[in-house]
Length: 151
Image 1 (cartoon, rainbow, N blue to C red):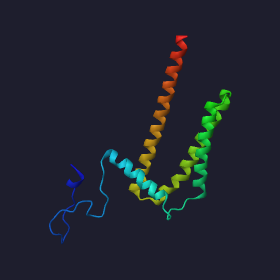
Image 2: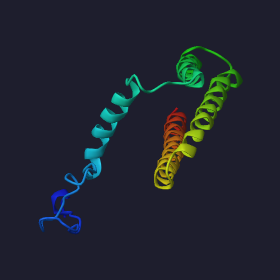
Image 3: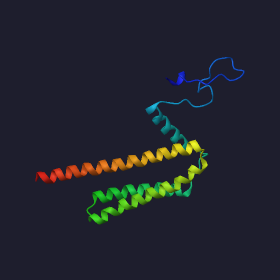
Image 4: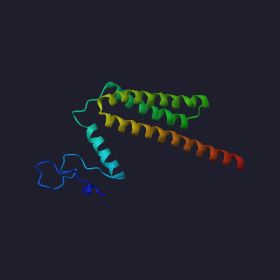
């Protein structure tokens, strides 16, 4: 079934033809990966819109992301004791928690359906992060133990 096959029941007083979602004033649903570039374009246009005001904590979050990136790169690139290398990672975890807490208040302004969708995206992102971290950890463990066993 395609988007053009989806129709609404005839409304009273209509000419008998089915109304498609495009004609009903609702945006057309896109399948799968077609959503991704359209969503990115929509987010970009919303982020540069004059009607959207950002709070001070939004700018703090952006600054924290930049600081975290530099601190993580420094922890990997510069020689330091292992305990000191963990500090940027702990700082990054704290910055991410700060970012999420500041954004969760947005959910209060959403409808129930929108709030559920945001929660599902947040949960999926969490699981993606957890499984990605485990994959990186297991890959590093595999290559470091395999390399150490050969010598």
